[in-house]
Length: 108
Picture 1 (cartoon, rainbow, N blue to C red):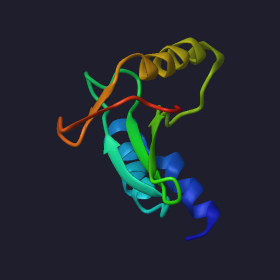
Picture 2: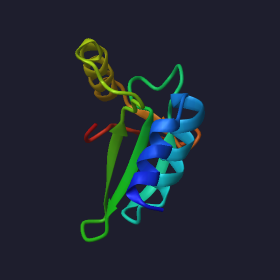
Picture 3: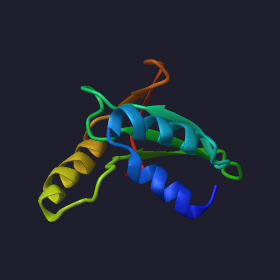
Picture 4: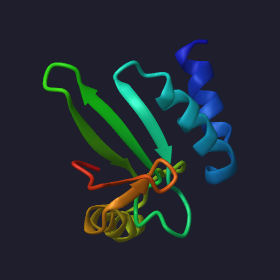
């Protein structure tokens, strides 16, 4: 698929949660350096829509990356809300693997 076709497909998504999030979950899961993609969107996400787990194979250390997803053009009026979501992402530990693990994000 060409870059133009990918760009057109991404721009065609009308609904962030029902269309764009499933695409991203699948796409992010195919990146070789990402060990796990946890979908956290919902009333208990506390800022991050996804948590990516990247494992450093040399140091044997996991890094937890929060992702705040926006599918449309970000306007100046959106910045405060996005900043709030980013700050929220760091505030509380995240529960992943169906409640089996609690982690704090390293970056968002």
